[in-house]
Length: 132
Image (cartoon, rainbow, N blue to C red; front, top):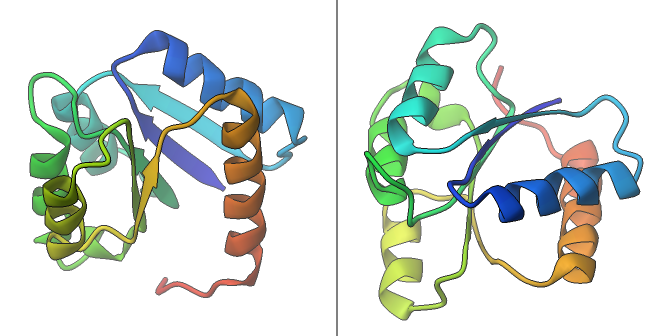
């Protein structure tokens, strides 16, 4: 499984990487980019595309919501599950995320919660079927 993490905060990216390591997520490759333009370039220029995108909203160069809108506007890329992973718990951000077809909205938490979230997320993916 290839996961793209779009996160401008190096500490939060490290936290996600450590959480995956702690749960022993074998078979998972985590790719990390720092901004929205890098995220789009990664998705458009890699074959295969990521299996999952974890997207922060407050990122430079192209905001997370813009990245979400652009990817979900494409017939092919809209199939990639995109989970918003952000500090924001603002109702407007949650509403906008789902309006723009985010698959999940996950508020960032402390390390232990992040480990639990990653574990549940990967277990969830074991049982899901997605378009090829």
